[in-house]
Length: 393
Image (cartoon, rainbow, N blue to C red; front, top):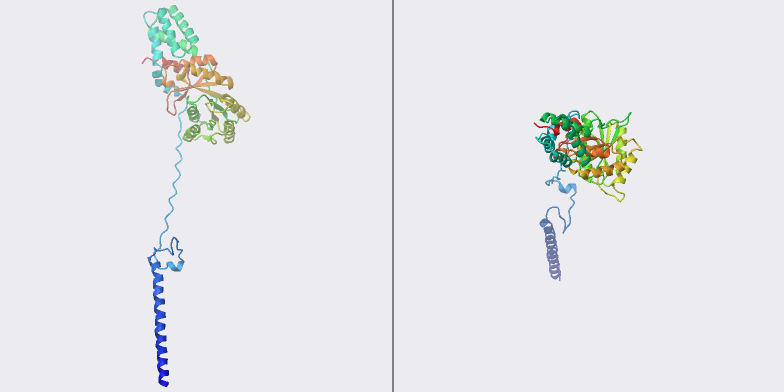
């Protein structure tokens, strides 16, 4: 009986020992199996598709991953260097050779005809045709021809020098050197002079406004430019570039803004800065139902609520001839044109348009463009112009 109890007790102890071992071993295997997937995962992952956020103590001893450096902030572009344009005095003289080259066919053709041995009816008709071809106009061409014919008949001699002198006098008389060709760039009292630049697209209107700013600044003045051609985005950008080159303030607004508002703000800015001149570049094409001319009239009326408009300069392309003259008439009906700017005079032998446009409008040519350079806009001087036409050297 006692022996049996002892055997049973030993068996129970053995079973307990074996069962405990079985219970312990499986738990350790399961623990290792659970840890293995974590070791196989990429560092920093704690489950499929999740990003592990490591606490500070978990990263101790680990290699730090440097955060990417912020890209360097680009340096602002350098301010454009301010240029000092040459003064307006003497510009026409400096450009005389270029003008002579472009007008060579016109001037030399007339001189050769007048110096011919026989000045018969056919020759005089050819002289008149040459003048008409140069856009002098039929009326002026007839008057110049008749004047030359009478003087040659009375004098009776036709040496080259005499013929040149006679032709010079006739051309000067029709260009009229007595007209006031001053561009008013200084306003009365403390207010600036206000200049509106008008004309159709393609004649060099915006370029003329920029070049005129250079003329004023070259003469020691200060300028505010108004980019009132708001229907052509490139016009405001172009004017901005012209202004930056010479240090002129440019007033502009978003594309499609009211042109009269831009012009008004430009004049206000000019008054506030104490500028000498405000130059307003206007639109040059039919862009609204009201029409280009109504728009120009509105711009002028709005500006005059702030200050008087001292100049309205009409820009004409010298190569367009009669078409340019028709443009001039239309503009003159809407705004009081005070002066003509003839561009592209370096590429045409039709300088007679100066005589015709002045005759038709009673408005003087005040400025001429003789090239594409920034300083190729010059105050028009009749004597220099005629001498360049008749240059023979």
